Image (cartoon, rainbow, N blue to C red):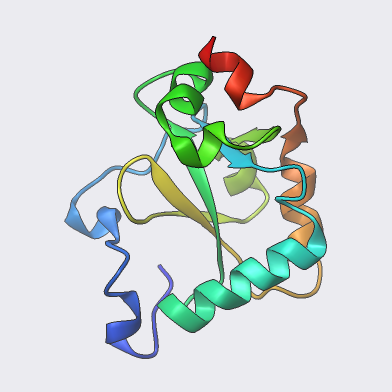
Length: 140
């Protein structure tokens, strides 16, 4: 599990695994919103901001744990406002060497990156298939 060099830097994100939450199973769908959500520059900027604020390089995602993708998109403004989502599974990400860290409120997670440079952004992007699904359309 990633360690923050300064314990106060993780105060805003509750690491739910520490409280006993089981890691998601391999078939859990992982969702990242936005057309540019996994563009190299976006991943680097997001991961660096996460490291600065929380002590680890991470990219925010949501997991469809207790409902299907359409219901999850309908239930969260942070997904519904985007015109596109990208999907993968927890198993695909783990098999590529990434860790999913339970952060903030369920169903929020972070994909933990070793660092925001090198092959990590490309490798994460390769694990998510771009969908033409409009989260707003799933609500109707």
